[in-house]
Image (cartoon, rainbow, N blue to C red; front, side, top):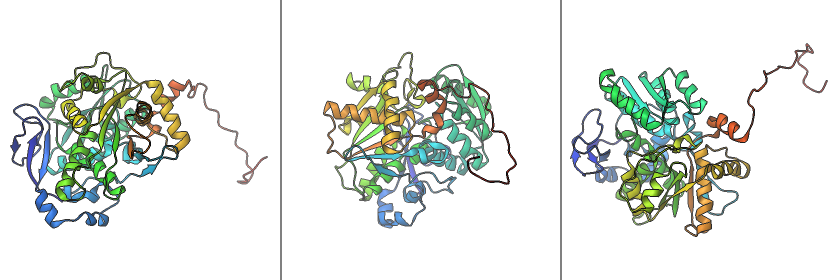
Length: 407
């Protein structure tokens, strides 16, 4: 595992010496990056050593903080070639513990929270991050406090409560939840685990970039389509590509176009990119059935926009109807039942093919960030399926000696 040599501000670039429980830059509030001595890691470690690691994200321990992991087996998810679209690969993050990519970030963040001796952790969540925080805090024996919009998918609410976390449902959006955490954290002695308010969720999410490279024989695709709410995964992968170049694990100059996928009911990143703005503006009246994309203004929006531009990528918004068509298409043609966010990525891929921004010859990795099984109530409502409209009636019991068959 790697020794942290500094924390670097993503805004001003100032470096800070290693410290317990880092949050954000004290000067400008910029998210902090964890920095290691990559030259030393390159001298001591080869990428082939990854093969000796566990079948989880901790196989990349050489570039993760030196602490005893709190792990539930997250990461090393399959990347499956599409059965319909040539050169398209689907990275299925729905197979992570807690059913989404959020498990990666929380594994790393909770690992370091325990390492620093923190006891009470709090975070706002659009759904899946809250469930991951609750699960990993339970595994680590820490207290978790989760704030969610009251209309989150029922699975997100139930998993938080089942894991023993303290859940507060908020009449508002994730920004309102974040404000409540900020207002109460000092009094309650909570450590704020919000998106980009601590640096280690990025470290967990960056392992997606390492896996993409490893699963493509240490090459990178032409483009990555990523459903983007808070954008930690996008930011983490870009950091991973930078590190791998420094380590000599991939060739320089081969980074993919990073494509940010949002929804037309909440599209601050596409709007800012189109208008040539360095940061986004708060999206009014954010609405979408894809809970993870209902983020009116990401804390790291300036980083997301910078990555899209540097990578020659783009940002695209799709409709809720296109999302649901994408869910059905992925399930029926690929055998993957995706979260709405995964359906959004497939809808965006098809639109970018039609526009000519992408070609079928381009090698593209599409991220499905969660399992569709966590959104059954959302799908049922959209498709007009009555769930338990009538009381369930179990078949009458017949004592026939356990025989199975028609009778």
